[in-house]
Image 1 (cartoon, rainbow, N blue to C red):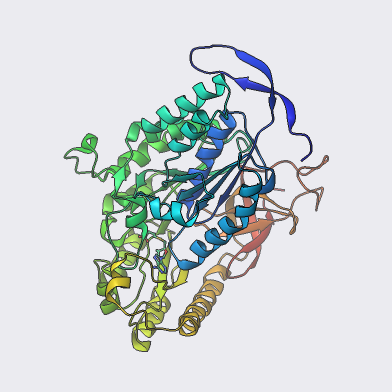
Image 2 (cartoon, rainbow, N blue to C red; image 1 turned 90 degrees about the vertical axis):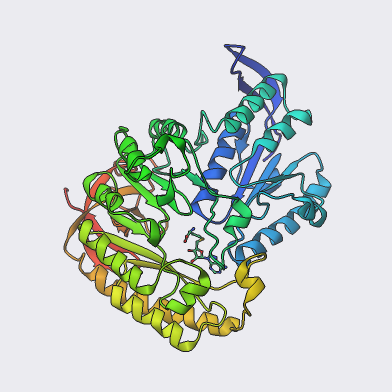
Length: 489
Ligand code: SAH
């Protein structure tokens, strides 16, 4: 990246109402993120804070003055990836000790990071999920910032402590990012026996509605067109907030109405739901509010009652079956996505077959299928024997995946020759097509008009469709995507 010296403009906020011009070293940051949408949202907020301090993003970790790894431990595989990445960065950190290396997210969790500090002594900072406060104080205390930047860092830390942020998307993403995620419930207190999330993200707590609405307004102003509200059990939003008191309405419904009123958003989604918390008024709100997409993500996890009991999910297969019928009855044209874990400890062949039968019966619109992975501290790891081999789990995953793929091929064939509204999310450089999604969350590619095949970054391009809703006439349908042409031209 050559000489990292530049004339940089440092915006000074708070007490000094003007801009300072100074000669400073150009500073770079690099954030590596894996895992769920919550991590994507957390990383964006860290990036925005770093950009307020004058840092510039870089794709190359080796050029970065600040490096953050935002991690996931929901299964062994993402945890291994993060560990490998940390090991790769060791020699670089030893060569350039002045660089800042931070580990963030579920690998750190909300408990004392002492054991991690011992294991990875070359890491400077251990940041819990959704809370980078320590990053700002570290940068300020270690003389890495000018006086003006320290003021900004302090303000950033204060804002986080108050549950507020002034800039949520990094400047590099504003106006280019169609989708944004907004965490509304942090942590989880459900304690499914396989799941490590409650141990890492702490107890369930809802964010105040005013803070969420303020962030939503900012995101709309920053160019976001589709907002997805996030929570481990998103439909439990607000039950712990005094502001909802004895209201008989589901708090998430009140929040959806407020967000619906914000101009700028074209689509609103929420995830993940839990079968026991999907009340009728929530389903009716999805049906009534035009911007709220008719798409529900509600994991079943297994199609067998005995397995569900040992997972401590709190419902039976028949409860789930009835829920799917209720969702379909109340939300016309709805699509339903689910998550399934195969190879849970002790899952017999017959129990696995019950899961296959349930998928065949319900014909859901998407299924994320994962092999069971024993996680530290969880009840399943402590009490049950992880008795199925990796090969057997993989065989079950594949069988279910093939089955679901056949179902989706049939369901998606219904879109052929139909025209569907697509919110355009980007340009696919390799396929030379625009892509986006239906309200029902189906991925759709479509051909550019006129200047076919041109990258939208090049001059003479097709009109920039990013963030627009385009009616697309579907000409090809596969299990994972659809392809068509804009209908209006
Ligand atoms: N809170 C959400 C999502 C949790 S994590 C929910 O209630 O579903 C996302 C998905 O990862 C889960 O739905 C589950 O299917 C999967 N998962 C969680 N723990 C797992 C484990 N130990 N092994 C395999 N998959 C797991």
